[in-house]
Image 1 (cartoon, helix red, strand yellow):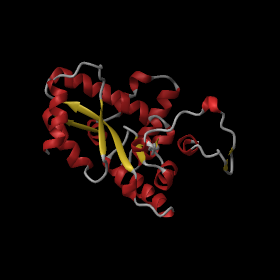
Image 2 (tube, rainbow, N blue to C red; image 1 turned 180 degrees about the horizontal axis):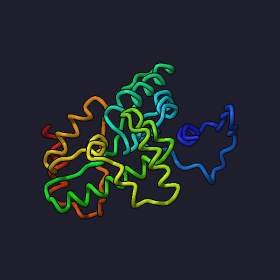
Image 3 (spheres, rainbow, N blue to C red; image 1 turned 60 degrees about the vertical axis):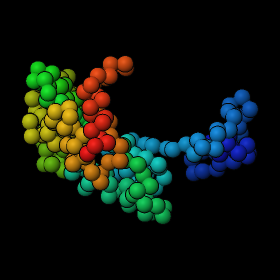
Length: 220
């Protein structure tokens, strides 16, 4: 469809599941400037199938925030690479983008709130059966089963207690604001190409801590 819009060629796609052969002028936007003619396709995922698909066809892969460096290196990247090899591509053809849980420790009171919030978020994600592999690779599959049972009974307040401090540190990066870029690069070097902080953020509320964190990625 994008090619039909860009080149004004007749739409003629006949696939296994869909046939697309009609493009009306009403739904056909003007071509994009040449510099933006290629629209990158990113997909998100956790398990092997979507990793494989990203390797086969996609420009990028959005890594779920409930993740670990070990799961990335042992499950996600090998399956992206396997998919890429099947279509004559390389792993490097897929940009890896990660949203990372971070806990900034500069202010003890604020850090404790962040720690509780991240623990609760991880517990919620870890209760999802289809994400169980992210736990199992560390030997915590039984914790996932417990969390699923609590979620099924809507006992949400009891779930964060099952996420130990050690588990928290596998799924989140903990450190001072100024140190977060260095810590993230040390953990995810060679695994991720772009990162985002998984933190509550209010548009316009950029303070020195955010500027310091962004600048840190240029200096480390």
